Length: 379
Ligand SMILES: Nc1ncnc2c1ncn2[C@@H]1O[C@H](COP(=O)(O)OP(=O)(O)OP(=O)(O)O)[C@@H](O)[C@H]1O
Ligand SMILES: [Mg+2]
Image 1 (tube, protein in one colour):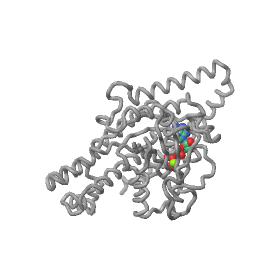
Image 2: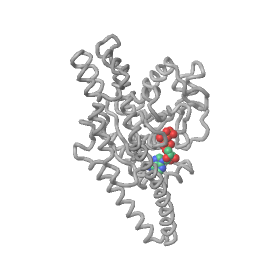
Image 3: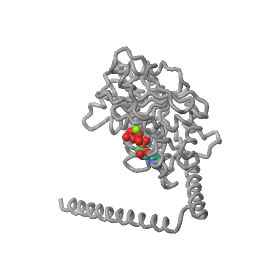
Image 4: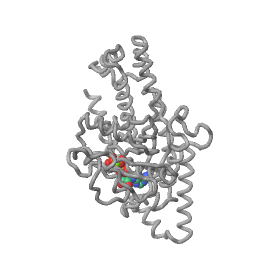
């Protein structure tokens, strides 16, 4: 079974949207898929799937004795797709005891679907990290915003250290090296790059080093850049990939970009997944493209690049193509009369208001910076 956990550093970046729609796309491609909502405490994948009121889920499994995992698997209206709801409004589900987590993971791993998609909660908490490490190719979602990119990097950093600590023998020299760095008041573990740390371990504990290197080689997270508005943003994914390679010592595979699409809020309002609401829109196109890449490169892609065999043009070219498609759609709407002059005037007006708000914010930030610089030069 291919396990596909979907995590993020920051909340609200599109994990649940990706998890639900990707599950539908993979089921449409003929796979037996189960989507599991593991955002315990804030479960909402059922809303995106269009399921009203769930009365059983992981919350029930954990709190009602002798509930089997089979009993909480729900059918959906999509052929080939089953669903396991999250907390099912059972209070306290988010606070998992270790033994509960182990039992849950064991039961999930014993299921026999082709693909299991895990919708995780945001951030690098212990639960999210442990669920993300199920399977070796979890998907990290980020938007192009600076804070979101930074959080994605920090999330991956936490994933790497969680994997290192889960692998290392507690009595080994390798463990002692990690612990020395962690205790270092000057922030040794924060500052040192993972390749550097591994070099130190290689000198002191070659056996431990081999184990850790192997664990990191197996780790092949994937990256999705969501809510893109400018095709030029696509290269941010490549930059993140390079930083992760350099500082964290692992390869991530950049699955591609998904544009922000206003149609999503309409689809969500009608409780219809966007793939069904508008399979042709730019958002659905991005989602289908990612599903295809996952199916054509199920995990062991060389150097993490599914398009390296020349079958796919890569995220930057895809983003350009999507953008051109959106402009064509706009032209079509204008030519057919579906969009009139009044709509354009309204759009321009809204954008002007946004621009002037940004200008005001920018002036305020500049004033603060100047004030700070003056204070610094005085002291
Ligand atoms: N590409 C997109 N275009 C337009 N809207 C989007 C897009 N991606 C996500 N959204 C919207 O953004 C909001 C957040 O998405 P979603 O709930 O999937 O994020 P999340 O990462 O699961 O959040 P959380 O961390 O709270 O679980 C939702 O309203 C969703 O419909
Ligand atoms: Mg979510």
